Image 1 (cartoon, rainbow, N blue to C red):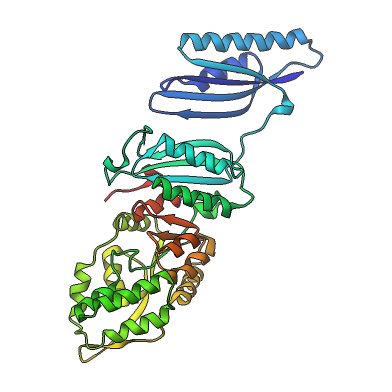
Image 2: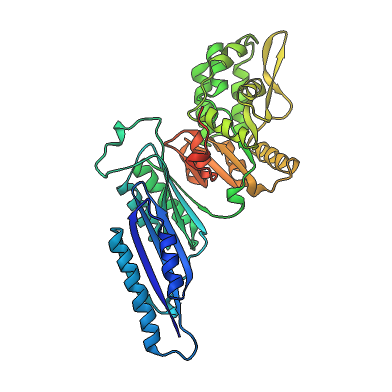
Length: 415
């Protein structure tokens, strides 16, 4: 004869609840069936599912004696240690084992409130997800009344929600969470909790407006005195209103005659986007391969390669004759399709499958590589790109991608 006992104990975080429960369970011939334990700054909570086994031929009285004895022992221990205890009798047919997390939802912001988390949980559960685990990965969770405008812009709060189920329509969940992300000003991600999602090995970046807070061709145009004309064409191209190749040729033609010496001064004033140095530091230390796949220019890509320790650079090569820009590039244009081809070639060169590749970009010409990579991340992207991308970083720096890749606060090295 056997039955189950579900025990929940919560007490001071310096208690060894498992050890104490182990001794009592052994005394009353109770076998462990399932266990979960969580520890916060001041409390520890233990959930134990115990199976009470009584020898063949034993009477119901024997079973009740064991059950009652174990219950009394647990309650006595709880009283001595000022623990909160709850005990339920569970039928074997009603037992549901702790399952491996199949889906993972991440919330990232400078500060998260309990209200933020509650709204995300409600939205996800309305699409069929049920979360078994909610855990803090970094930063702090504030009260619902805290003003987000007053928080430290360098702070990062990350909460992870794990579910043992997979939504039937993950696209609809992602769409709902994207709308909520814009409403709450919180970056929200949902992803399958697979081996490859935790073992990415190659990260490919767009350069302009992704690694750097500028479009280099616009900066060159300012030096050439055609800044407004080029900026308008660039904006149309990034939104996807005009084909990249055509926009690129139009902009390049306006640069004809620009002095080569300007390139060095433009490179020196380029500003890195938030979190870039921290992201590359951590990727390099962990042995990830990195690449720039850019519709910009390789002169500036190589400048960043040296500064950030990037492994590969593929971008357009400016044609320069007698120290002047001719308004053309050498070779074929690195457009969206070419970026996707290069990403695939690099994955094959590194012996990786595409699911182990991360691609990061902001413009319409990045969509082919974002959709091809196992993880495609739109960074502070144009609306069309944001709607099409699987993952979006809109409210934090580029280093927040580390959490999406499976890093925790203790894994991340600060500058």
